[in-house]
Every structure is written in structure tokens, then in C-alpha cells.
Amino acid sequence: MTTQTSLPLFYEQPRPLAAGVHDNLSLAGNTGFAYAAKTNAVPLVATELPTACRHFPIVFTDGEQPTPVAVLGVRGQENLFVDAQGQWRPGTYIPAYVRRYPFIFMENEDRSQYTLCVDEKAAAVVEGRDNPFFDEAGEPTALARSALEFCRDYQNQHAYTLEFARALADADLLIENRADITLADGQRLAMSGFKVIDEAKFNKLPEAEFLRWRANGWLPLVYCHLLSINTWPSLIDQVQPVAATEEAAAEA
Image (cartoon, rainbow, N blue to C red):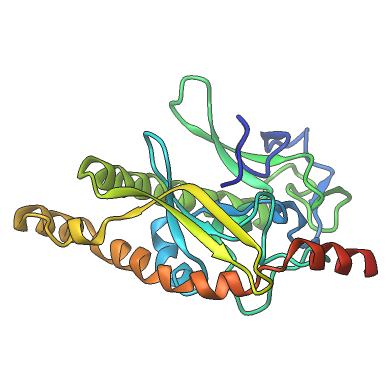
């Protein structure tokens, strides 16, 4: 899986959105998704899983706090859903983590509250008043209010999703897995460093535990993950041999 730095994936210079600092900045339209072109997985939140499971394999990150992620490519720095022009493949789902950018909620130093931030390095953040963050009076525009609401909803769902993932880990239901891939030309690839739900062990959950999971709304999330495994073949079908990819890039 793609290695992350201390900053959240995609973000280079997030800063609290504030009048007086960002009052002459706007959000440009149609800048595409080039910022996501070199990541092979992005986080998902619970409400996305029913849709995401039809488009990507959903796996869980390794570590003390597992997180469900959408697998977007099988090589490092490869996203099979973003083309050379930075456009997301039509007809496929765009994860909320991707759509949220360049905005994000970030915790303050004592972790008591979140602040809406914007990545000042984002290509979509430009000077001008065409689609501003603040109006002439310094009040947040509909754009800024919409970003705040989106990030608030995302953060709430993120917390719920982590609770679900922790429950999987606590029940010892996550097992290490790997994908061994053979391309049409015979090239072999291997993808590791992720976990999946042990379906056999899940089916043996004690009745009381099963009922607790149902009450918490976690059962559909488990089934979405299991269904998503069926999307591995379609993902692999998109993988081009390295030589062919380099040749296409040279011709472009």
C-alpha cells in the first residue's frame, strides 16, 4: 500500500480557513484529480461501503488501528482510476476522501475540537473572487459552509468507521492477506501489507456478539467488504504491463 507521511494523504500545507488570510482566494473548478494519481489506496467511511464495494476491493490497513480502504491500484504510486489528464474514470465511484480535498478537519493542539482547514498548495486553490471562500464582508460563502458541513459529516462517519474496525480487530477477525497477480503478458505482481475479514471466523461469532454487531449496524459493512472481493478481477484487468505503460506515455 502507498506509504503515508505525517500529513494526511494528499495534503501539503493545510491551514485553518480564515477571513483576512484567505479572503482573496477561490476554489477553481474542473482541476481534476491529479493529486490522487499516485496513490493506490484511499480511506473509506462506513456510509460509502455499499457503493464502493461495487467498484473497488475494500481491505483493511495493518496496524493497531485498522482502517477500511479502497484499493485503486496494485503497484506503488498507481491509481488506475485517474487518467493521464487527471480525470477520474467515468462511471466509477469517487471516494469521499478524494472529493473532500482540498478541505479537511484538523484537531487543535489539545485535541478538544476540529478546525476547517484548506490545503494552500492545492492546484484548485487560486487567487481571485470567482468562487471565493469569503464574501466582501468577510463572511463564509455557501462554498465554505458546504465544505464545513461535508467535513463535519465525514469526521462523524470516520469515528464510527474506526469503531467498527476496532471491533473487528478486538474480535480477532482480521487476517493478513496478499494479492498475487499475473498479467496477460505473464508479468507477476504481488501486493501485501493489508488485512481482510476471516469469513469463517466471522460466521462463528457467538449469538450475543452477532446481535450486538447487528444493533450497531456493522453487519452490512462486513458483507460489503466480502462482496468487494469480487472486484479484484476487474481491477487487475485494468493493469497494464510496465513496458506498455511507458510506451503509451512516450506517445502521448
